[in-house]
Amino acid sequence: MTEHIEKIKNLSFRFDKETIAALEKITTTEQFKKGKIILQQGDVCRKSYLIINGVARKFFYSDKKEITTEFFFKDDVAISFKSYINQKPSKEIIECLTDITVETVDYTAFETAKKQFPLLLEYDVLLTELYIIWLEDRLFDFHTLSAKERYEALLKKSPEYFHHLKLTHIASYLGVSLETLSRIRSKI
Image 1 (cartoon, rainbow, N blue to C red):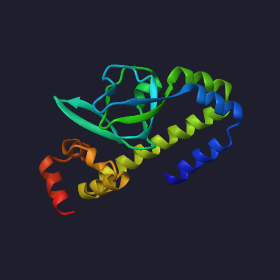
Image 2 (cartoon, one colour):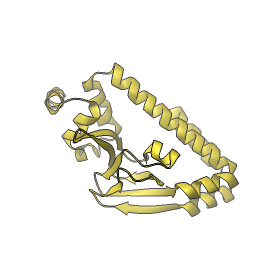
Image 3 (tube, rainbow, N blue to C red):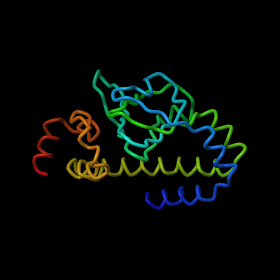
Image 4 (cartoon, one colour):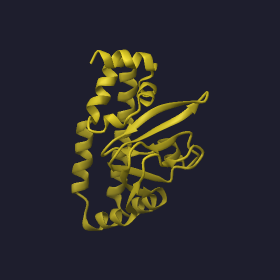
């Protein structure tokens, strides 16, 4: 995945002044408080949220239980991908676990800018590819790594924010019970 991030960085270095100006024009910086829901279930995901600092999570309800599917840390793009791409209601919720600062880009504005600035289209494709790679890695890890190994990988991803994650959210993300998570944590 690191090589893909390098591709994105290299592409952004190729942006001309007009492309940079167009992207800056449609990008806003916002701050949200801990507990804020930035995407409600049933709402259309009309913005992407690049996390500058803080932590958010994506989850849904199943049989009245919260199922955490993603944590978003610094430099992650918080998005309900299917809702964003199709501009249809989201099955997921995105919640701020800490106060967060994000750079937001509106879907419609970005679609318009991509038509005028071809490098933004290439940028969008690379971001989509990066998300697909992350998703494939997550599925592969879920089927090949033990819960302990998945826990350790999550811990390494952003140790400075890890203490903000509730154990119930971590257990749900890992697909284990709280008791199993407790046993995992006691061995580390």
